[in-house]
Length: 94
Image (cartoon, rainbow, N blue to C red):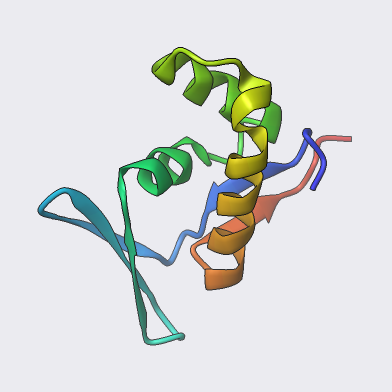
């Protein structure tokens, strides 16, 4: 996944807060996905506008770390969220 990739939340996924987690229902897959606070922060930053690099920078500023320190974990989380069907990839501007 390129740092210019623009992940976005799948428009058909329904989200609800349950205690301290975000629970996502994936229609068509009859699946529920529960996100902890780290995965939730990543998911919420995936708006189809921000690039992977911008998501890392935004999250890094929240936790006081360098974006490069978070990139491997953010990439892995986004890949998993894509596989679960709660994220999609927005077309890259050309």
